[in-house]
Image (cartoon, rainbow over all chains, first blue to last red; front, side, top):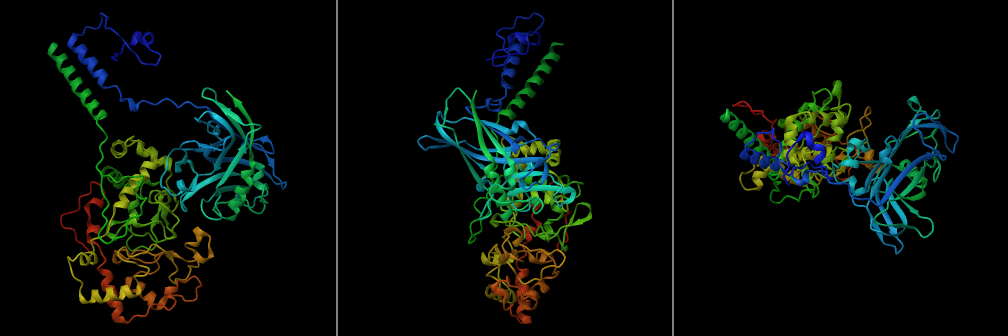
Length: 283
Length: 355
């Protein structure tokens, strides 16, 4: 398809795909002899970027995972709201980030389908990061599962991009590995400078691995995924579980965790219990 | 008038066509092959598995390696601590210098044959060559930079825009591509042309002293400093007292395992005569004293001391001198003077005084 730039008529000539087309050169004000005209057309054609360089359309989606973070069932508000944990310790949260990876759905006949290249970083500060969409085969599904953190393979395979870019501040530079879950804030019970609390939970190997799988069952017979509707799975993470769901973790005793180890594994055991399905909405 | 328009349009045509050709031309990469000398083990399989070694990637990595702008104040390129004439260690410094007159906490190791190395750092904390630079780039006592600042600088430099385009198909200037390019450069620095290598290839012969030293080496040192790499890449406690100030626990700091207390990576002995000083913190300044440590200096009271060193290493003065001669034969002048590893654009003066 030939196209030339005709600024005055551009709008009228826009096709549905946004390309500007013109079938004929009828404007008397442009005095081009035909060879030049052809030449110009030829060149215009040539400088069209190759098809691969054009941004491809987002693949259609039929499943959407949305995460809502809360504490004691109160919506999480960064910095300004004070919360109370199981041990009556007061705290605020200034930063919350965690990885969700290897998202899978389980069919009624126990088949697992997985999202391709499934790595997502949920960052409380960035609302867009709290939900993400994917295309899954239409079927009846009974449960959804995902990893909180980044699987061990990606921890040992060198420099990564996008959600796994070390630029995101979720990568340890002195002891290779991803920070799977990061919660920072303040608490008067903390003995650290400025009463900080810092839980950087990571470790992908051995007994102290902080990798945790969350598997959540849908209500009743499960959910039906079709081609033309988006099933939004709304998941709540009620994060006061960080301190007590499986092991007692007190701010007064351990306000900070910066290395893989027993404490990190205990905190991971706790927050894995925080994730629950609130509802599934079809859009 | 008509001629002018014709010329103008012709010029337009030529420039547009050339722009088109450069745009549509397939992205060409010149693939390189890592040299695997005869008799060597296979290099670590995943080093270049997802990062094919190319001339374009190598050259980009080389420029990055020598660019001070990767550090916060512009003064500390990778090469400030990794000097070619010292086999890419810091010559004659126990600790290297970093941002704001700070010192590093360990001795900068030489960089060569990294494709055969599974873990980086004295404590093995880094599990892949590609992510190794993140530590010196961001540490406050080293280059003290941040990735966003570095990427902004790279994006604003037309030379880098060109080099990233040449090295990577999508031409994106990302931390991933930067790290992959650096890994291509550092992973290509190879040492396999010392006198020892030439003797093994039948191109040279040892002197009597070197030969006696080699025999002593095989009997007493080779179990850890295993030829041909002259390291088995293991972590061992070689009987140094733990520094009371730094309290450096070595490998235990990574694994958390008390059995790893005071264990450090066995360094390669290749080029050891130019990588002074020695040990993880550079506490021993000369090679003869480093040898002496194994004869008389090992602290045999430590429970995690390597079992092979519990009786220290007995040697006569003559054996010590022979061993020293052999270690000198591990110096690789091809590595130390290889123009491919020089700062891009640097032309050495015609008669370099080579030490």
